[in-house]
Length: 249
Image 1 (cartoon, rainbow, N blue to C red):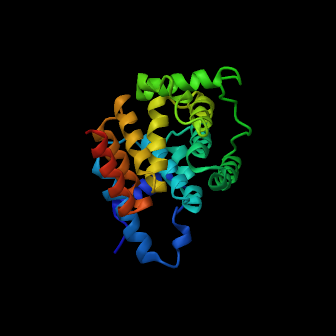
Image 2: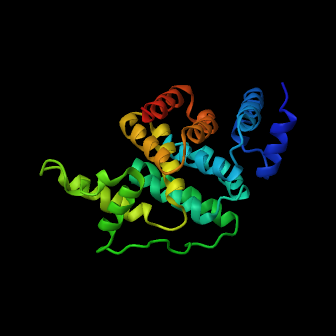
């Protein structure tokens, strides 16, 4: 088996070298995986390269694919994903994966940026203050999920109400209100974090519905999921597909 001409052209277009250099002792696998991920999957639909790479980066964060993230990040930059967008993907991952799993990706991102001549730190993207983060976060929830979220931050049993407040103030107020990515992009990457992480099907269904509500329709989410499948495998992809279908009910 040889790498197909399309896969080779795709690889040459986005990567200065072989992104699967770690597979040098497994050339047969590297060839058929490249043919699948860089040919068959890419040609499945009309998703643009920038969106494809943003989804893949978020997926690799979700599945803890730090080595693959390092390999594919230069390609994402060549595809038009800006340094600010990359950082916002990494930052937002903390809300859904936790700093314990995301911290290594900060280091990898900064190493790749430095190698690419990208000056650090990047310009700040915060738009809220300690006083405005909760109401701004609540408004983001309302914009994405509907008016039913208006008072969610103060709902629920008293002993756990603080978590709903944190969800509004921190998850949405600290992250979703930042510059660099709009709501549609942020909901798409959240879908990818949750699909790749697994075990979050209730939240994944909710965010699939949020995506659909703001314009990332079912067909778009299936395109995104299809591009992420090589990086998370079939079980989590099929679970995510079920969540997309359930979000439409």
